[in-house]
Every structure is written in structure tokens, then in C-alpha cells.
Amino acid sequence: MTDEKRVKCLIVGAGPVGALAALYAAKRGWDVEVYELRGDLRNASTTPLNFTRSINLALSERGINALRYSGSDSLLDAVVADTIPMYGRMIHSQDSRGALTETAQPYDVHGQFQRAIDRANLNKTFLSELEKLPNVKVLFHHKLTGADFRLHKAWFERRLPSDGDKRPGEIEVDFDVIFGCDGAHSSVRYHMMKYARMNYEQTYIDTLWCEFNIPAVSSTHTISTTPSARDGFATSPNHLHIWPGRDSMFIAIPSTDSSFTCTLFAPAATFAKLEQRPHDIEPFFQAHFPGAADLIGPGSITEQFTKAPHLPLISIKCSPHHYTSTGIILGDAAHAMVPFYGQGMNAGLEDVRVLFQHLDRHASTPSGRAAALDAYNAERVADAHAINDLAYGNYWEMHAGVQSTPYLVRKKLEEFLSDKLPALGFATQYRRVSFTNQRYSEVVEAVAAQRKVLVSGLWSSVAVAGIAWAVWLSRPGGLFARNRINVFSELRGVAHNIADAVRGILR
Ligand SMILES: Cc1cc2nc3c(=O)[nH]c(=O)nc-3n(C[C@H](O)[C@H](O)[C@H](O)COP(=O)(O)OP(=O)(O)OC[C@H]3O[C@@H](n4cnc5c(N)ncnc54)[C@H](O)[C@@H]3O)c2cc1C
Image (cartoon, rainbow, N blue to C red; front, side, top):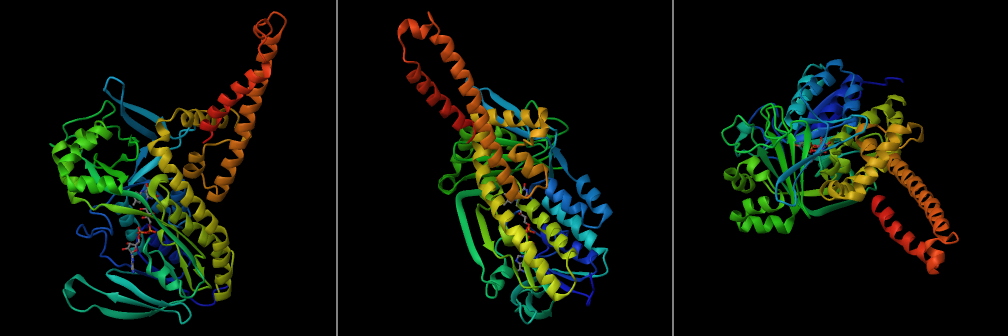
């Protein structure tokens, strides 16, 4: 790798992906400037875009692996120290007599787990790490308003809180390469589209979301706990809690202060009804998510629903993710996805690791960088599209699959094979996505191939058992012979029923 000159890298957006990208770029010796629209997140008065307060996210292997390769020994330890292990899902429901139930479903037969992390705390850790590096400048209250990817110039509006109503000033900045880490509504992507022939697709699903909070037990508001409650948490601290509904879902993720950040996902029409009739909010929770309202505190549930923003869920696919050697989009800017696989941030952090892996294989010259960005794009677009689709699919798994017998049978079967016959290479899709670094597009292929093998295996076993059964019943004096039953039409009927069951399991 030849260092032609110090590369000047602008990073737009100091969210988790921008902050990690800044660390990687700085460790590579580049001159890094990070421009962030909002104020410093370490300041308690700064609210993250789209959230009234910070939310908790599930950090899994891909995110952790990206931290491992950041070049900072202390970063991973500092991040992990601030997380809570979640060993599986806890499904909350009601039995036939109306009694509340909770059922733990471990994530993984090998004991792998997710980690709950506070998004704001993660960002604070990243920013504090960046501050230690002499070749990084972080500029808050700077909004990207334009970029010319051929002239290597970008423009930012600077609006400091002390400016009041004054017209914001604009600054012009030169760059060698610009990283767009500015989220789903990325300005970098918008300006890059004028240069790259970018295909772009965005979809809003008919589901909105809204945050809630289950307070710690010591707080005066908690009037209820579940049997798994401990250590000041109103319910198990080591699970991701799900109240599955027919077309909605309520989830809760533990926080280090013993509270839970919770999210209601429901169709837009349900939100509209509840907005019009706030006195229906508590009965709605009692009917669809038994026990959840009591954990939140019935007194505060209506207030929480009314005060929190009701936000849409967007999914974005685009290609390419870069323009020559001068611009690239990463994280939500390149592939915002619905949050049902808990992979949005993990995939964004993985983008950074994969990008720098490609940069390390090429010369540090404009043409070397262009080749690296091309190679990254060739690899990563397929993976971004794959996780986008998987995230959609997981909504069914989270709100319906977790209570569906065929789904649970398949999970058990795949886990059994993964545990007892590891040489066969079986693993659940969830394990591959959350606990390995296998490329997302390869996960999709591997799972499809594995399901084909399962289908063949199930069919072969069924066929052998069916033939043995028919031979037994058709023997002289057997049931079929005695009653002159046509063995083939019987077998056809049985095969039909079994096919339905197999289809259900392999869905
Ligand atoms: C309800 C919900 C639950 C989720 N749960 C999970 C989970 O469990 N696990 C997981 O991995 N992911 C989860 N995600 C997804 C995760 O939050 C995102 O994927 C992640 O925050 C993306 O990080 P980012 O840095 O790419 O973008 P962002 O976090 O959106 O950061 C972008 C930054 O750019 C700044 N910015 C925007 N425009 C400009 C501009 N013009 N100029 C300068 N700066 C700008 C913004 O202020 C912001 O700081 C969830 C998302 C939602 C909505």
C-alpha cells in the first residue's frame, strides 16, 4: 500500500456507523472530519433524531466483530461492559383459563446470546474514543446541504444553538472521499444520485411504532411483576420480551438501570383509532398484550402513548453504494431496514469492517480507492438486499412464528441436527444471521439448501414408513386384505395430509 498523501475523509453523520467509520479511517492514518447535524449526544439535552429518548438495541456478533477490528483494544471491552445479555425470547401470553404465562425460548442451542445496549451510551463510548485521536475533528450542528463528487467539495449549514433565529452560515469543505453515514433520509445519498446511476427503492410498511418504558421495580410506578422478575427488573432481565399479537406486537428490552425500553408495533389504522380514542389504549393493551399494561403502569400507559412520536418503518434498497473513489454510503443511508431482525445497526457496523478490508487490499491512491470501493460494492449490495428481505420475513417469526407449532418443530429439528450432527453444517437462520459473520446472501442460500435437504429427508422417512405400513396392512389376513381396501388411494390420502404438515414446518 503506497501513501500518496494523507487522505482527507469527511464523514457525514455521527451515529453508530459514522462514529465507527471515523475510528477505522483515523487508525488508517487519514485526516478525518465528522459532521453531525445535531448537538453532542453526550449532552443530556440532545435528543436523537426520531426518538424522544434513547432506545435499546440488540447488539450481536456482526456488530461486535466490527468493533474487534477497529484497532482500539479498549473499545470492545468498554462497549460490552455496558450491555445486558439476552439469552432468548420470553413469550408472554395467557392460558385457556386466562392465567398469565411466560415461556422462555432460547436463541441458540449452543448458548449464544444477544446483548441489549443503550444506543446513546454506545454513541457516547464511540465519541469519547474518537476524541482521543489527534487526526479526528468532530463538528456538531453541521448539516450537509450539498456535495460535488467530481470537484471534491461539500457544503454544510452551521446552526449553533447560540445563533437563535439568525440565518445559518454555510461553509465549504474539500475532501478526497466522503462517507455518507447520515441515516435513512441521507443527504449524501441524495446528492450522490446526481453522479452515480443509482437504482433506488423505498418502501413504507403498514406498521407504525412507538416507544414505552417499563420502570424499575423500586420505582413507585411499578405495580406488577412477572414470575421471572429479579434484581429490580419487573420481568426477566435476560430476555427480549415479546407479547405477540395477531397483527401487532409489543416488545421489551432490558436497560442497565433495571427498566425496559419497549416498542409497540401495530398497523397504522390501529394507531389512528387509539389516537382518536385515548381511553381505549389501556383496554387495547389488556386485550392484545396481557400483563404488559400492568408492568408499564396503567396510569402512565395512555400518557406514554400520547406523548411519544408514532413513527413509520422504512425499508431502502439502492445500488450502487458508491461513486468512483470519492463517495460511499454506509449503514441506514445505504440499506435502512425494518427492525425485526435486530440487524440494522449490526449490518451498518459490519459495512465499515468490510469496507476497510477492501481498502486494505488496495493502494492508497485515488485509483486504488476506486477499485476498493468497486469491490466493496460488488460484495455488499447483495448482502444489504438479503438482510433487508430477511428483516421483513422476521416480522412473521416474531409475532406469529413464536407461537406456531410447525415453526417451533422446525427450529427444534434444525437445532437438534446442528447440535448432534455438526458435520452436516445445519444451523438455524437466526443463528447464522445473529451469531456468525457469514455473508447475509450466503445465509439465504445456505438456509434454502438446508431446507431442501430437510424436505428430502422428511419425505424419504415418510415414504419408507408409509411403504412399510402399507406392506404390513396388505399382508394376507391384514386390514387392507380383509376389507379389500385399495392401498394406493389410502397412501395418496395419507401423503396429502403429511405434505400439508411438512409445508407448515418448512415455511
Ligand atoms: C424501533 C427500532 C428498533 C431497532 N432495533 C435495532 C436492534 O435491535 N439492533 C440493530 O442492530 N438495529 C436496530 N435498529 C436499527 C438501528 O437503529 C439503525 O440501523 C442504526 O441506528 C443506523 O445507524 P446509522 O449510523 O447508519 O444511522 P443513524 O443512527 O440514523 O445516524 C445518522 C446520523 O446522521 C445525522 N445526520 C442526518 N442527516 C444529516 C445531515 N444532512 N448532515 C449531517 N448529519 C446528518 C443524524 O443526526 C444521525 O446522528 C432499530 C431501529 C428502530 C427504528
